[in-house]
Image (cartoon, each protein chain N blue to C red):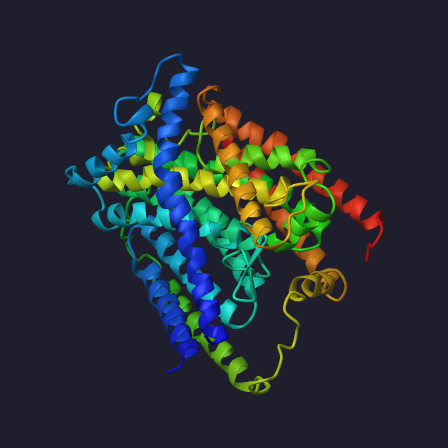
Length: 344
Length: 172
């Protein structure tokens, strides 16, 4: 087999693996997990009728979503109403392309790094994609031609701009200490030194809070806010178009969890444990996925524990607390790196 | 047609078509969305010029922040369709046309007079080693272009303060 063909097959294999994990293993089960955990927290059983422990509930829900009548109201902007769900789903499913999900595997005498694309701009690609994912919400909201949807879109756009800044500034602290934008280099730095959540605890907290805001989850789900805006930006969407908005929320959660794990919790690495060879490679995949699922659990846990912010509280937190703190964090990290050994 | 020229034609074609759509479109929201597609086309061109950093910054800053802000303002004011204003000052139309032609001529002249780009042959390595672009850019910004860089930040600060004063005055 020629080396080029091998590379193409390896890349295709990695993409297939990741999408299988996200679309087949993660998405249906996380919806089930969210409803069961919600039940647990609220002291009720949750869905437990379809299959053992209600595990097949999602298998029943997905065909329902496919088969329902797709209602396109007469007053909507047809073109934008149709493309909005796609626009929100594409960034949600492509962000993971640059996240290293394991160390490496050796197949047929060749080492395959376990990352789909190891690009130099690395996390900038990720920040770019997360910053455009808001277009799905805003376009859907505007195309719906409904005042509640419009309010939801308005809130989403202001919220994303406000929290994106602190998110990016917090992440720059990690880039400065690792000396690279490449997620692979950031994970290797953490494996060699210490997980970033320890020396950069402040940046870590800012990043996590902003990630909650970017994924539009409670306590930051003001774009949806069903108690005041009916369904917010997706009020006028039904059947599978609604399903795509619904899926994108969970795909975004996965992407956000993967970002948190890669930047601050050592990615696929595990301290005090060095297994080499293919066993180590497989173990690193398991470690990475386990860490991501822990963070997905935290997302669910927070959703069913905290109430929703009021809009002015949301803006005050973003601009008056997180932004100054993230600038402070960056200054401190830059100062330490500039004085430390190996400084330029 | 090689893959690279195809991507170039597609990206620049999209950028031009959507830039035109941006101007022609009556609904301001759709104008902004057309501009988003234009910026994506430009970002693809930056990637082809081996400047992925510029491409990423273009998407993060322009498509991801500035245009979202535009959308926010348009939706806040709930502008649905531009009212067709009566032309009370036809001279501005002509001035606009003249300045557009002048700008196009200027750009064309600069492009034609530019020294020919060095021809790269297969096997030539990139002129800046991959991975070094961002440190290089940073060093240039804080050494050779320090004055321009700092002047720009003062300008932005002045604009922000100005906007604040204007909005305060209206409230009083």
